[in-house]
Each structure stands twice: as C-alpha cells, then as structure tokens.
Amino acid sequence: MIRRFFRSQLFKPCLAFVIVAAVFITYWITAERHERQLLQLETRITSEQIAFRLQNYIATRINLLQGLRQELTTGAILDKKQFSSHVNEVMSNFDGFQAINWIDAEGYIRWINPEAGNESALNAFLREHPVASPLLRRVDRSGESIATPPLDLLQGGRGFATYFPILVNGRSEGYINGVFRLEPMLKASLGSDVTANFNYMIVDEENEVFRFEEDEEYQGASVLAPYPIQVLNRNWQVTLHPRRHLLESHDTPIDEGILVIGLLMALGLAWELWRLDHSRQSLRARTDELQANYQAYPDLQFRVEADGTILDYHTSRLESKLFVQPHEFLGKRMQDVLPDVVGKQFSDAFEIVGREQKSVHIEYTLPIDGNLDSFEARIVPLRDAEMIVIARDITSRKDAENRQRLMMDELDHRVKNTLASILALHEHTRQSSETMEEYSERFSARLLAMARMHETLARNEWHGVGLRRLIHDTMDAYCSENEHRFSLQGDDIMLRPEVSSAMCLAVHELTTNAVKYGSLSNPSGRVDVVWTMIEEDHRLQLIWTESGGPIVKAPSAEGLGLTLIKGLIGSQLGGKVDLDIQPSGLVATMSIPLDRYDSLESWKSEVQPSGA
Image (cartoon, rainbow, N blue to C red; front, side):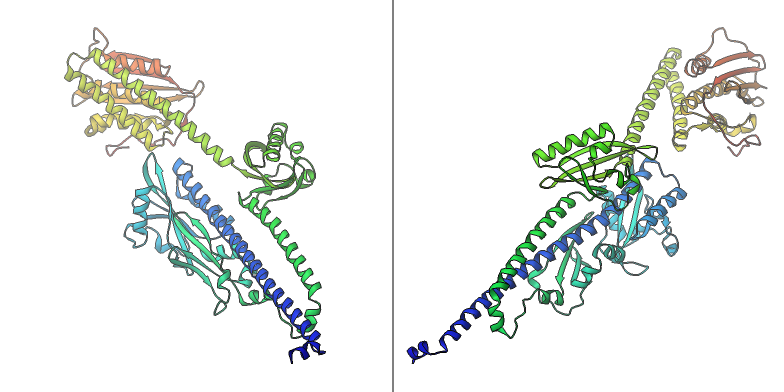
C-alpha cells in the first residue's frame, strides 16, 4: 500500500503541501518571534522616553524651587511681595504646580501662592500634621530636600509635595514647600499616542501614583517595560503594558488559503526579512540618536558635521538665547558664526571629539541683548562625521557664584575691622586704667556698645543705621529713666556701617562722661544734641551741648574717653572734633565727611520717654 502511494498521483501534491506547510509554519514562528521582539523594543524605548520626559519635567520644576530657595538664602527675596512676584512668574511659565509656599522655621505656613482656594492652609502649624511633621523632622536632621509619597490633594486629584530647607549660616530659616499635580505632568509626558497604545502604571516604591487600565486583562505580560525615575528621595517606576490592539497588530495573520500563501512564501519571506532588517537598522540609528540626546537634555541643541557645519537645531523655550537667527547659522560652521574666542573653543572641541570619539565640555560667554550671558556646552559624538552640541544658559549660576564670593570677601573685611577695633579699644583702655577692675569695667562697657551697634546693623542687614536711632539707643542704655533730660534735633540720616560703629563709640564715650562727671551726674542737668547735613561738601555737623550740671573745670590732662573720641572721628572717619569744656558743661562739635548717605523721613518731634 505504501509503495502504491509513492507511485500514485497524490504523492507530489502531498509532498508539496507538506513542504509548503513546513516552510509556512517555520516562517510564522520566526515572524511571530521577530514581531514580539520588535514590540518589546518599541515598548522599552517608549517607556524610556516617558520616564525621561517625566524625570525632566519634575527635575526642571525642582530646580526652579531650588533656585527660589537660593534666592531666599542669599537675601535676594526679602518679603512676601517679592516672594509672590517670583512664584507667580514661575507658575505662569511652568504648569504642574498646585501651590508654592514658604514655611517658617517653627513649622507655620506663612506665605501661600496662589492664595485663592488655599486660605485654610495659611498659618497652619505643620509640626502637628501627621504627614508633614515627620518629613520636616527628617529635613531638619539630614538638611536635604525630600518629597512626600503620592497623596490626594485637597483641591482634588493626585499629587505630591516637596520640602526644601532654607539654611542661613547653618541656621534654619524655614522651608520652601512645592505641591505638584500629577495630571498635567502625565499629560505633558505621555502624549495621546502612548495612552492610545499602552496601559501604564506609575508606582512610588510601594505606593501607587497613577494607573491607566482600559483593557480588563493583559495578554502581553512578557512585554512589560518597567523603567525607574528618581524624585528627590523617592524612587518611582513607570511600567507599560501594550494594549490588546497593539499586540494583535504584531501578530502574523494566517490566511485560510494556506496553499496560496505557501506558493508566495518564498517571495514573501525574502521581503519580510528585508523589511525586518531595514526596520532594525532604522531603529538602531534612531536609538543611537536618542541615547546621545538623553545624555543631557538640551536647552539649545545643534546637530553638526565633523568640521562644525550646522545641519539642524532644536530649542523648546530659549529662542531668545540664540546668538544669531537660524537663517544666519544653518549651513555654516559654528566657529565662523560665533565670536573669535568662542569659535576657537568650539573648533578645538570638534577636533577632540572627532579624534577621540568622546564628549567634551566647555564654558563660554556671549553678548545677548546687551548683556554678557554665560553658557556651558557639551559636544557629543553622534555617528560617523556627525556630532550633537548641547548648550545651556548658566548665567544665573555664575551670578550666584560671584555674589557668594563678594559676600565672603565683605564678611572677611568686616571681621578684620571689628577685631582691629577691639584690639585698639583694649590697648587704649589698658593704658588709662590703674586697676584690673577699672580696666574690666571700661572695656566691657565699650565692647557692649560695639555689640549693640552690630546687633542693630544685623537687624538692618548691614545696610546702615539711622543717626537718630544710633544716638537714642546708645544714650538710652545709660540713662533710660531720664529720657526727658536729653533731646535730639535734626533730620534722620542713614549712616553706613563703618561710620555707624565709630559714631556709636564716640556717643558712648560722651554719654558715660556726662553720667560720671557732666550734666547727667546730678538731677538737674541735661544734654541737647543737634545735627545738620551740609549738602555742599556732604559733611555731617553734630553739636553735643551739656548744661545744668555741676560746675566743670578743665582737667590738666585730657582723659582717655575724649582722646578716643578724637581718634575715632579724626583718624577713622577723617573728621574734626572740637571739645570746648566750659563751666556750664562740655560742648563737643563734630564735623564728619560722608561720601554717600540716604536721607530718611525726618522725625517731626523729639524723642519721648517711651523710646524711639
């Protein structure tokens, strides 16, 4: 029977059927495997793109909050009005914020933006809040910024909050609190193509952040694509599941006309292999380009040839930072478009990247809209004979570094001056004191006068001290119960810090002299202080007049206090002092040059016993 079958007319058709069926099955298995690999690769790349967009979206806004914290730390923001102005500008240009708040060091919410809809949170004490309290303690211990787990916002929807410590000289000045909404983040990062083709889930460690599941069950568990995201101290993970129609689109259909498909299989297989190979090469080239782009998210990005010729550019929000317009640089060499010095930097960088095939980082400055802005650029090899140039504006960072350096120099200068003043006081007091008790009393009093002035300057953030406040506070320290016995007359004048310290010591010496020996040593004496500003040569003239005290006799030798006054006003401030010791009391006339001063509102009445 078998021999008969081999010899029958059915053998060849059956053999052909078996061969074609085997070839088809082999092709179908191979094609399904390739399609599943292609789907896995597409899912992985899409997951990586989403994670990158979301990471960059969050990182950009966290950097804005970091900048806001830096401005509060350095004193660039001093009050609620400035804070609101900065926050409104941030929130108008960057979506995703529910609110940006300032919390003081005690844990009270003091400033809220926007206030509309958030009035109930104003002055809330977060140290008693079940979620915020442990986070603030953690921030205080570590000094690092942290983010909360995902939570339901009071205004509806899901979100999370961040806390950034504000530290000034190692002391906590409060926190910047940023509250984020998830919906705009996901809308900006996912896009309609992702939601149309994938189910996705975002998890914050063990807490679910967001989930989108339109299909009831998944048939593609083997093509899940998890990808991590770092949000301050929190670890998120994005997971994609291809939706049913995407899985089905990658399945190779089997036609019931298997014999027809078998006859066309040779040509179809060759074409399919060519298509897969071409798709794989295109995908590999695109992946290489994306990986180069992902090394640093561009503020300004240029694709150039090995000699620096600009082929293309991309910028999302910094068109104003272009040195010249696109039609002036496209098709030209970058080193020919930029200024000579900057062009030389790029030319050298292109040579190194082309030779060593590694990324190069440079910094440079460009004149933009009349200002000299600072930039940093990274040149990254893309593929044969092409590179990516990624430029970023770092003007704010450079300005912050310069401000910090100037502040350190100013601090060093003020500390040296203070120490020199203390040493001079010590030497003068030691020479004029006969006993250690006398030295201790005089030196302590003068040192306390300096300390009070430094405290007043610190309260005014070292901008200076009003002359009326300086004289009143110094005299009040020695005769607070007899304020009716001295009067101050003159328009208030803002004195610079270096002038304030010397004037404080001079008034201190005059006051202690009056209390011990002059008009304030008996119940009936008084002191009148009158000052005027001579505008022609920017000089301050101050007259100290004592009257009603005991009869004064001119001493045979001038005391240390009066000598110290002449040294402070004459040597330190370049002024003149006339000390006229009359029987009715001392009359001291001081003339002090002021190179720069700010007139404040004049006091319209003399200081009353209640204080200034």
